[in-house]
Length: 134
Image (tube, rainbow, N blue to C red; front, side, top):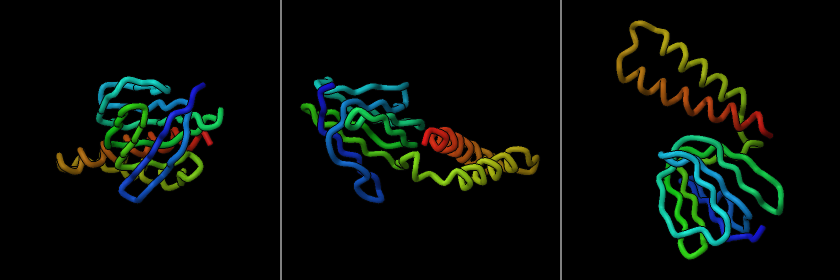
């Protein structure tokens, strides 16, 4: 496969800069795959797994929120949260999942508590799924 320039920048700093052969990320309207020569586009990111092929090897990451930009062959991923599979603390993700479940099952939880717990639950599920792909 023909490589393209990929930069992944998060609020915490640069997560990756180099050549990649393929990128698949979840946008708010579904998954998008990027190869060399992709048309220019900008898309808002959803919450899901990112698959990146680097030097012929697939790497996985939890990718949550932000934007994807493809301009003249340069691909920039600017997620709110980005964690490589081998850096995810699976126990922490499980604990977050359990806390969210507890709030969702509590009949005294407010609407705000429920919305926050649902978001926490979705993030925890993404992290748990990606962590299992180390």
